[in-house]
Amino acid sequence: MADLNVKIHNLQIKNPVMLASGTCGYAEEINDFYDVSQLGGIFLKGLTLHNRDGNLYPRMAETPSGMLNAVGLQNKGIDHFIEHIYPRIKNYNTPLIINVNGSTVEDYIALTEKVNELDHIPAIELNISCPNVKEGGMAFGITCPGAEAVTRAVRDVYDKTLIVKLSPNVTDITEIAKAVEGQGADSVSLVNTFVGMAIDAEKRKPLLSTITGGLSGPAIKPIALRMVWQVANAVKIPVVAMGGIMNATDAIEFILAGATAVQVGTAIFKNPYIPLQIVEGIQTYLERHMINSVNELTGGLLL
Image 1 (cartoon, rainbow, N blue to C red):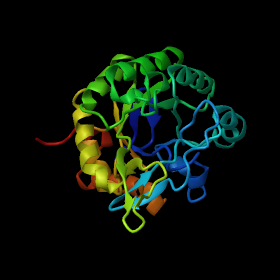
Image 2: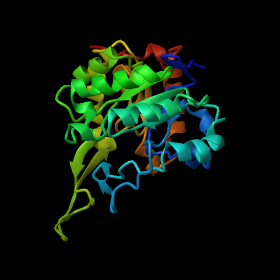
Image 3: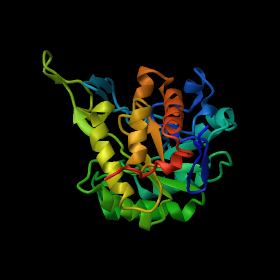
Image 4: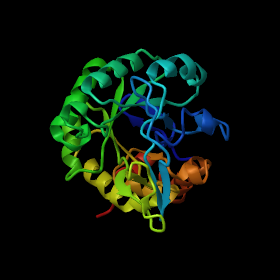
């Protein structure tokens, strides 16, 4: 059988298929269907320093070839996670990666310091798409100075693998990627959701309480694929790709574009077994093409 092992900085991963944050809870939900240890890793539901109730309902809406969400990072905070959830999931035999969020640099630092003490969490995904309260609501991830500031601050207090999650709602995503690489990011993950909206024409009202939300699913795949290819050619650190991956062919396309690993998200809502099917499909593809390792595919796009 072909070798599916990949490496993201110091993170050894048994296969390149991982679950995307916000779509798989804290791993237990998917583990009810099958052993999550079969997957390359789990990006856990986003955490904040303190409890967040999230946005008002409705906060999810189906769209053609995708979905909009405006959940608003609902969670009970890092202390609740450490006390009540971490003890139940810490021994899963696959990397558990916490998605770290904050409204200020100080929030990110305080949360990261707590996560750094958790022995069974080998990496964090630094979500830099959250409102920067001190800068008039501008997201950290859409300017190079903002992205650099939060990445540098977290790098100073975190000594494990640091993956920075990039926003696609920017003019040039390669500039943001290079900026966080320069401040110590070990990897980048992309893309986060695109800003979109949906309207109920009969009621003449938006379908989301927040009016706009994050668009994910197959509809965004071509744009996500382009951005992954651009970033992979702009940085030297590993790229973790996401954006409309529904099957093994989708995953392979992202790997050919330069990704070391992929995250599967919206597809789980259709069928929670799709990530396992993707692992099997990649293995079959490698054997059919007589390729010994999935790493040989990374960046293998023929131009």
